Structure formats: structure tokens, C-alpha cells
Amino acid sequence: MLHPTGKEITMASIVPPRPGSYFLALSSVVLLLLPAAVSASQGDKEPVYRDCVKQCVRTNCTGARLRGFQSAQPPYMVLTGWTCRDDCQYQCMWTTVGLYQAEGYSIPQFHGKWPFVRFLCFEEPASALASLLNGLACLLMLLRYRRAVPRQSPMYHTINAFSLVSLNAWFWSTVFHTRDTYLTEKMDYFCASAVILYSIYLCCVRTLGLRRPGVSSIVGVLLILVFTSHVSYLTFVSFDYGYNMAANATIGMINLLWWLCWCWQNRHTLPYWWKCGLVVLLLHGLALLELLDFPPLLWVLDAHAVWHLSTVPVHFLFYSFLIDDSLHLLNTEKAGVKLD
Image (cartoon, rainbow, N blue to C red; front, side):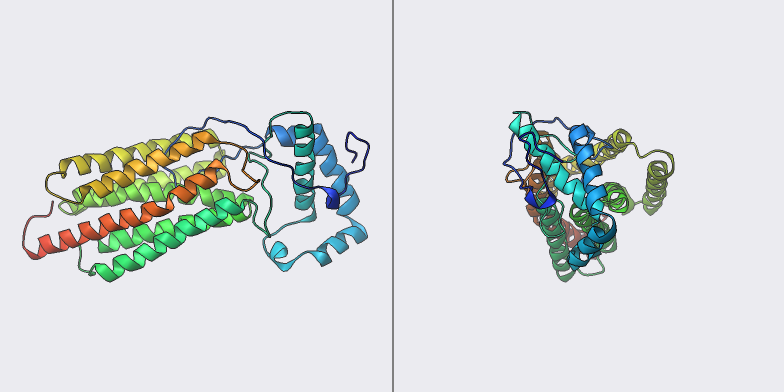
């Protein structure tokens, strides 16, 4: 492929350009993971990009050149499934970005994402690191919870299960931001929805289930049916990003309002109620960082990564609330007082 200057562009000669500026409004909901993915974007619809990929694949991904590519490919790239075609798309993405910048146009997205500099096998290094840090924070606080709260506490097992669901979500978020594939994208979306639904169940058990276990059981069954229907529709009918966002926004709002109502009702009786209220508000407020969507700084740090990084400290406050509340419930139960 030729650059407008007439110089031939090869895979080895492409260097990532400097960042530009762009703005994209995005609805905010309390989601652990909300990758902004669509089937096609401005960048990958460009003829220059498509022609570049075709030429690169035709030249480098057959015969002796393909064998040379495969023999020189690092083991970590092989393990994460990077192919010769993937590498062509990556290199041609930077070719297209360079042409956009040379003409003074805004940086385009490719396949629903901003262009990121690949670090080792990580497609989105900052977001992958942020997801990993969230997972580590969740694991650290879960271990602290288990040390601080006896197993006899009424909410002990429910909170442990919620933590495992959250850890699973952060694991798949890390995997997805490391390598975007059909499977990792679906797991990232589905596990994010599972966390919100389980948070609703956690709230139901705390507010109703301790006094009426049957109610929380019914709600739990309904939430499982909702999750199953949601995943089935996205898997077997249509992976509709708009529907997925609307569905998560709806259940996220239910989760928000239910927890805030509980906090308001207990503001005079539970001195630690504010921790729960602040966590819920922070999670929704920090999601607004997605509204600042911009091309990644240094081709690494974008608004999505900033959002994930900002949620890391929230785990410490949330588990502080869970520890206080679990110990309160245990002491109340021992004293023979009716659980609130």
C-alpha cells in the first residue's frame, strides 16, 4: 500500500501517531464493564483501511511469509490467539490514523474502539490493568471480610457469593480488554449483567429476606429467569448493543433506588448507612466519566480506563460497609432482637 507521499508503507514501517481529540456522548449506567462495541466504525469502513488489510493479508499471510510470521511470533501472542490477519488489521489501523491526522480530521474509531497501542498481547493495556486492579481490590477485601466476620452472620454466605460473581466479572473484563474476541466480548457483557442482578438479590436479602426468606427466594428465581432470558436473546436472537445497554440501565436503576431507599430508612438507626449510600452514588457518578469519551492519551489511557481506575477505591468503602453491617446483624441476632 502507498502513502499519499508515494512511499510504500510496510508493516514494519508504521509508527503510532500522536493523539488527537474527539467526543462521543454515552448514556451512563452503573455497570462494572461497558465496552463501547459496535459492528463497524468510521475507521474500519474506510476504503484505505480495507484495501490495506486486503493487500497485507495477500502479501504476508500466505506461504513462506505466513510461516515466517508464525515462527517469529512470541508465545504470548500465540496463546492469546493473535493471527497474521489480526496483525494486518492492527498495522493498517495506524496507517489509516496517520492519514486522518495528515488531513486534519478527527481520530476515527475501529470496530467500535479507539486505536490503542498494543503492549505485548494487551489490546487495551490501561483498561486491562484497571480491570485487574479492581479484581485484586475485590479479592483483598473479600479475604478481609472473611477474617472479620464470623460465618454465623446472616449475610455471610450471600456476600461471599456476590464477591465471587464480582471476581468472575473482573476476570472476564481483564481478559476482554487483553484480547477482544467473540467469546471474551460476550463473557464480559454477560458477567457485567450478572453482577448487577446479584446486587439486586443482595439488596433483597438484606431488606426483605432476613425476615421473609420466601420473598428473597422468589426474587432470586425471577432474577435467574431474567438473566437466562437476557443471555439467550443476545446469544440466539440478536446481539443488540442498544437493547443490552437499555436492559442494564433498567436493572441498574432498580439496584440504585432500592439501595438508596434502604439507606434513607436506616439513616437514624445505622451509623454506617452513609457508606452504602456513598458507594451507590459513586458508582453511578463515576460512570459519567464515560461521557468524556476521547481518543486515548498516549494511545493508552481513554475514558473507559479512567472510569475503571476510579472504581478501584470504591471496593474498600463497600466492603467496609458490608463488614459493619454483617457484624451488626450478628450482634442483633445474638441479642435476640428482631432483624431490621
